[in-house]
Image 1 (cartoon, one colour):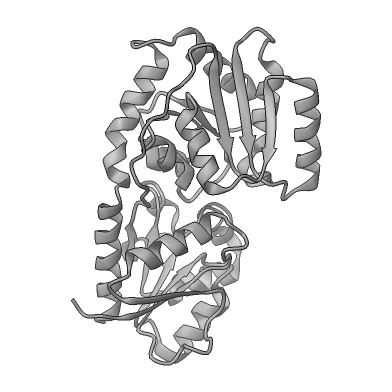
Image 2: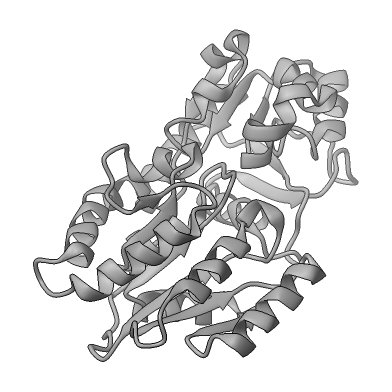
Length: 324
């Protein structure tokens, strides 16, 4: 294997602790056989001798993509498409569209991503599923249904659907919701506080360290994911690989991870449907109920998200870029 110098451009670094940063950090670790570093913008002081650029986010990393192309052309230039890229920016943003054109190859992170690319760029795209380690399923209470949602409070994650569903649950539903995520939108934070005051079965926990978040996912009966747009949410994989089934909005970013026939979808923004699903999971529990069915479906998807699969796909991409 040829050892290469790889620079990963991420618009978010450790202080943001969001999906872009988590992907960049994991890829740096998976590429330990090479020399890989993470930067917010390129070129930097160590730019001389870089062989490959992996740029996360077509729009927000557009300047770095352009700078690389100015020096190297398409050689070594790969761009990773996020949810806001695929389902918003590449529709009409000139910077995002320019990044697609400049890149030698593109990566999408879920199975339906390629079809959202402009037709002229689909042939240079490949799928790389993100990965997470398999975690033990922790003991789950039998007294009630424990639900967790993980995601910073911002419009794309649609936290209002979860809050509205919480308000629709009857007080005796025995469904308890923990909502994890910082209030990136202060108005959404105020709404979460109001929902918590009115609904004793809903708790907004704010930002929680990743290790503690994983424990809560492992102990929950369900993870809820309400997003309106996703490039491939890592938290879904964390739940699947923890033995915690998912209730997710039926959007391409989620269906591309969970499969077309998954039984845990609700339409985006449909709070009554989400509330009904949560109640059904509570009333149809047990070894043969809805939760068990969803858990079995998740178990079939789990091998797609194993670290060795992501490592192998990532190394193939880097080698292809580095040997142009």
